[in-house]
Amino acid sequence: MDLYSIDKLMHETRQLAARYRQTTGNTLPVTGEIARFDVAKALDLQLIDDPTLGYDAIGKTGERKGLRILIKGRVIFEDSRSTPRIGQVNPDGRWDNIVMVLFDDNYLPVEMYEATSDDISAALKTKTESSNKKRGAMSVAQFKIIGQLVWTQEDGLESEVWDNHSD
Image 1 (tube, rainbow, N blue to C red):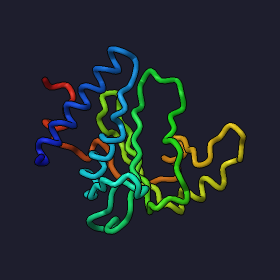
Image 2: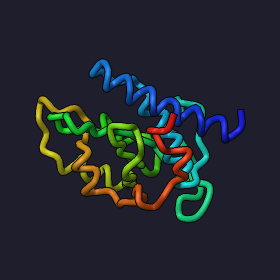
Image 3: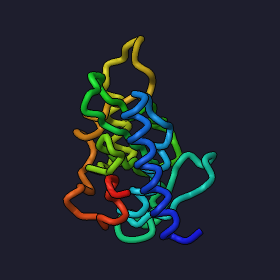
């Protein structure tokens, strides 16, 4: 399958996921794959297809070259009242950096933040231990504080690929 076909499939997946949520109020479990695709494309990463490795991609160029990147994605719905979390992060994992991509309710990327394993470890160690907190759990807000903003929607993406409203 060529790159254009994957771009088109991701475009259709975004539309389907957004329409499904609007219709049913439930979410389809596609955010992770969309996040992997968007981060790899935006930050020039090579995706890894072996989930047992503990990371999603390897940097191909620049300051990320050779780094093992774990990718997390979260959709921030306007009607949500909960505090979004990035889920559990294994601080002893085999990754070097984590990139978190935030999506709007149309599953379009809005921002990407990146944090190093040292940043994550330090943040997790300073958290107060509590019986109701999972080891390695982190909120989106906390990740944004310790991470660095590495991409924004204003940086631009091809509208014909990313426009979720065209038929």
